[in-house]
Image (tube, rainbow, N blue to C red; front, side):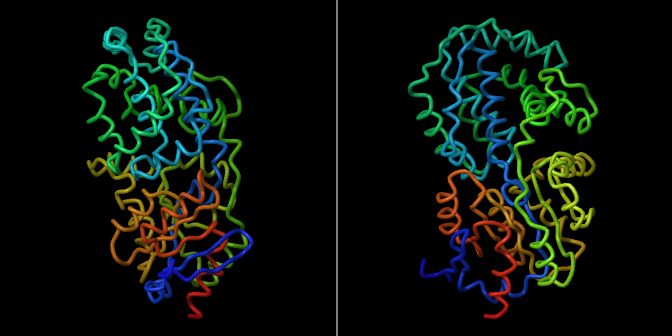
Length: 374
């Protein structure tokens, strides 16, 4: 990588783009993505995506999908498109592609049941109405390869591309029954996912509704671990000249804060833009599609600082595109040490031309100090 300065430490290689050193030296504000940056969710979100997909497919078709199909490589293949930063949309893509394997006669019956289920507002009632009525053994041997091949057809438009490729085959009634774009409490996918992920206690606290699918007190989220050290934030404050931090994340606010605890207090409240904050803004101003890679959350999280240059720290292609879409005063640091297929992620960030590539967020203070010395 002749266009990068390479530094080594115990966690891995740090890369700094040579022709961006002067711009990096002007950084006075840092905005963080959350998952994969502040929190290690490898043993949480991918497990919840797999569980959500397997439960819905078994209910709708009778086919039991082996958990092993949902590998780190499969996860990465969808994330690298830039269109599946949100895990509900990731689960939707997998579910729809698997349903495309159902034979014509059975998919017609599933479509009929889905249409009838629309008389119910409750996602659990729609789910129960459809569940167990269609029996079909989807071929498992070739499924992994088909899911991988499907990911190659996708792009940063995410669900829009999924629908353009599959809706004609599967039918609109099934999508409407899943009510994918609906909120938690409306959509089968998002409601089931969050109940599995949060557990009943945190689910009730977050959404102020009773769980209907899952009744375990604790959820998959408890397997998450904090990545960022308090000392890292202290060191970054020294480099930046204060708590010039923001968050632009597709995570739900209450979920992230449940894991981060008092660490999040270092980041000003008005500079935290989570998934649900963006959703509220979207409804308030009457605009759709404000989630990443739309730069809305990044721009809003940094606007109060009147920054010269902003560094956005993320772990996905969607994060890279968000920084690029925000404009020339926004630079990007890709982290690769706490994600699935980390070496592929690292190579991907380098091939995209990321300004900085680091193993974890904890290498940033010394990286920025190095840049300032240069």
